[in-house]
Length: 114
Length: 116
Image 1 (cartoon, chains in turn brown, orange):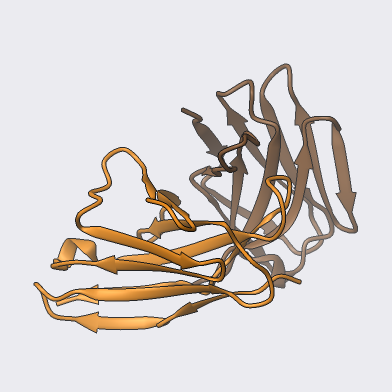
Image 2: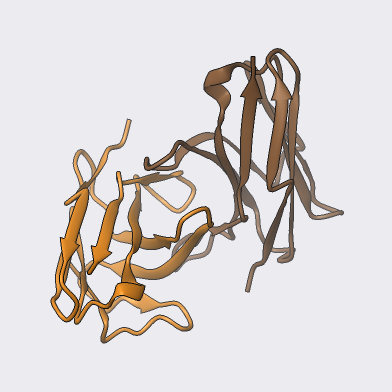
């Protein structure tokens, strides 16, 4: 099955700096890679996703890059703000006829300090 | 956007009792729902895939007789934790997809289960 590794487990940045979180996956057939933000005790919320037919996607301060050859993808947050503090999870899945099971990374606790 | 509602948000039960958690898709139909479990400061682990009108598909290591899943309609899936024990205490989250397999997953608010 799919295995997703995520680094770092914790990340502290100063407000205004950039944050980068990296993930690798094992299943070369995976073709959908979402990123979720989870605040303490709340549901994970989708912040951005990318499919294997593109290498980069950007939405305001958030961007995701995908390297299919190396089987890794990264989340980039620019101009970080205190409200960006949360746990971020990457995930990978393969779209099949039977469904689309997401395998999550281990999470990154991002802390944006004033 | 798509909304997934989960109830209850918190439940405390005594060891040996059963607890039912409901997951509803409020404004869309979901033939497939997913149940995840999350221990403190850990990732989301898929427990099972709930299929409307058929048996759920359980992940390796998840006891199907302990975690009963019923997906009786296109908008409701339930997870029943039977004979709960303290080690079952966790955060249980359901998710569903609006549309086809290319659509993103939306999560419920989660249920914090504490077994005393």
